[in-house]
Amino acid sequence: MSSDPRSDIDIAIIGAGIIGITAAAYLAEAGQSVTLIDRTGICEETSSGNAAAFAFTDPLPLAHKGMMRQLPKWLADPLGPLSIPPAYLPKLLPWLWRFWRAAADGNYEASLAAQGGLMKLAEAEWMGLMQRSATRGMLHEDGCLELYESDAEFQSSLPGWAARDRFGIEYRHLAKSELPDYQPGLAKSFVRGTFLPGWKTVSDPKDLGKAIWRYAEEKGAVFVRGDVGLITPAHGRLTIQLRQGRTVRARQIVIAAGAWSHLLAQQLGDRVPLETERGYNTTLPKTAFDVKRQLVFAGHGFVITPLDTGLRVGGAVELAGLHRPPNFARSKAMLEKAKRFLPGLDPTGGREWMGYRPSLPDTLPVIGRAQSSPNVFYAFGHGHLGLTQSAATARLVRDLVTGASPAIDLAPFSAQRF
Ligand SMILES: Cc1cc2nc3c(=O)[nH]c(=O)nc-3n(C[C@H](O)[C@H](O)[C@H](O)COP(=O)(O)OP(=O)(O)OC[C@H]3O[C@@H](n4cnc5c(N)ncnc54)[C@H](O)[C@@H]3O)c2cc1C
Image (cartoon, rainbow, N blue to C red):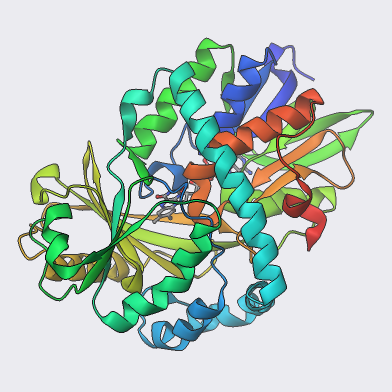
């Protein structure tokens, strides 16, 4: 072991995405000694380029019967809202089977109840963290506008809105004549809309991640660049072998490595069916169009978000694993649609991006202990909602690490539920 003081650390968090960053902030606030380890940097992967939504009003699990009915139509369009490269299908089948089962009535209801509880905590924790870290100025509270191109599309959205009633989530259905009040310049093809006043966005997810990290650093957290290869429990501590050849020892570890987390969990005896839902977007200059609030085109699987740093157009799901090169024809296809939906949009000068949503088939993240090592904690698998649920996850990680009673029941989020 080298004499470098960072070779023997107290709590190591692996992964400096928004989950690892917020966990570092919460633990450092609680007086814990925290080292955040990442092979790239602070908020440089999926958490850097997402759609910036605090989707506290979206507790609905992805796998539901309405979605299953859409699948054949979506899969028929290779650049549509959902695609699976045929060569990847055999590897994906076990995950798809679990996803299918998650849509069954009882399973769906169980995920909905768990997700509803986590979302309530998510909003309270983010508002508190923003206050404490002086980042409240990065919050946009303009709500969002979901748009429908046919009455049939609107009607098929109604069960989802009814499910939100159970959580007291406020929304307002809009007639065609009301749409320009919420977003001027929309194409005439939209016949209905729904306004969600409680939906929030942030000024830029990467800027927010870096700001929360600065706050964590002020509280004493430190960063180490390193690519974690092997984790081995030994004599009540854990040895972390970095691919660069260095080894560090830790008393406790939090695995928050996003779409790569299952590779580490597997070493500790937990086989977690984590897949990645790859998503694409293009960030245009701010001047591309005056978008008043986040616009959601659910039937096309993408959104447009006005950021302080640009106008972000994108979404979609590509189930294609961690190794295939990006297919930016997907971001171009969404941009073309955006131009159709907002005819005055200037689609030039954009920057394309792809990120890896870390997704479990029942939509719930993994938050809890490793099976074989009580001093390893998991915090990953937040799918479409990692930014939204990060502060709540950090709170729960802090509860576990410090031995406090968790703020919500963690059984539905266990790594051993599969
Ligand atoms: C197009 C798109 C739009 C989205 N929009 C939203 C949205 O509006 N709202 C929302 O809430 N969520 C959204 N999401 C989802 C959200 O971005 C993710 O859930 C979230 O970023 C996951 O955060 P994370 O910290 O788990 O993972 P990441 O941000 O991917 O961070 C994981 C980190 O772990 C590191 N790492 C992995 N393995 C190792 C290793 N072995 N050693 C060292 N480091 C390692 C990686 O380098 C990376 O930095 C969107 C996602 C996409 C793709």
